[in-house]
Image (tube, rainbow over all chains, first blue to last red):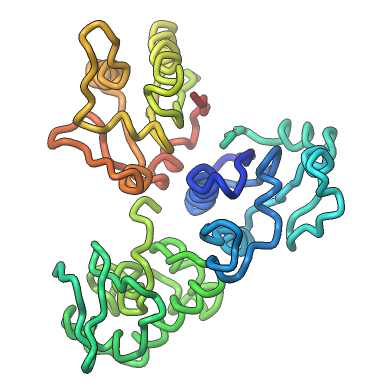
Length: 121
Length: 113
Length: 117
């Protein structure tokens, strides 16, 4: 068992990258690693509320973010969201989904120090 | 086992490459019965409980549960008597996640998890 | 205790330098007396598994080089079968690349240091 911080950087429009990062996180948690996550750069767009019906969405994307609900089932977390990445994208006011919390650079540094491994996706 | 359609009553419903329902919205309990006949399973209440469980799981999380996840989620919701792979394999001998999701009209779960 | 490494490759063998870097790193690991637990191909790195790769003789086939290195040194060279299927990639029979899942990567990772390319 290891403490792994998975750093997500991909926009939800980059479906392969964002989705495969999520699959990796779930697989690591499934074999009992302690997985925490950091949403950074364009990955903060993943936290925007997805359209319920993919055909209503501006682009035909699968709403894989619904699977974030699995984090609680696997005792994953914390799920940190980079404050700086939100600010620079005009998303400072975004209401974060349940279980996610803001992190400034000092908090991100601490999370990185506490992890045994960092994996960036 | 590969076929392009499954016959349910008067209807022929298209299947995907893996023999799973192509259109999630085509599902009715009769579809589960038709798949069960193909797989030579006779469905009991215990089977239906799992079928409805994976359907609900899909609606909530938008993903088909692979075996580890299914066991974990069942244990959480229905207790360890049902949330264990022995119980599930007795019901679905070909692989609980694989078979239950097929009967439930969901996409095939990821092989790699 | 001797450090063991897990290498995780995520880029296409053609669209980046990750295979070249990983190969150099892997050689250095063994040359310095450390061990390799696994080399795992994920995301676009699974393109290396494609049996139809056809390069001119004067361009190095990094996927093939990595495969023969792993065979010589008996290092598990694994790829994510789901990532491959999504890209329409199937390994040849007797491929040096072994079909595996993320769960296997995750299990082998225990007790190793992950290095990404």
